[in-house]
Length: 54
Image 1 (cartoon, one colour):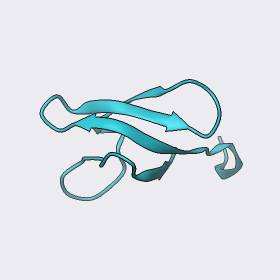
Image 2 (image 1 turned 45 degrees about the vertical axis):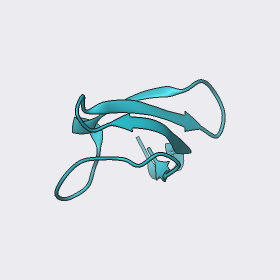
Image 3 (image 1 turned 90 degrees about the vertical axis):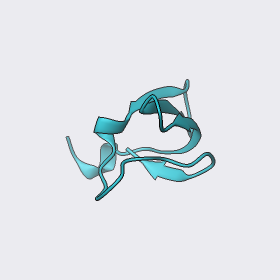
Image 4 (image 1 turned 60 degrees about the horizontal axis):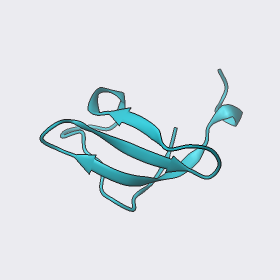
């Protein structure tokens, strides 16, 4: 696994109460995302329309 394998996408939606949502990558089908996979400090959440890399 290298950094060159990373993709970027846009958060389609994310439900804070349920702790999951979906990301639309630049190419391919929408991807499921769970809050435990979010790499950030503090409250793990994503905002609709946010640009992310994974």
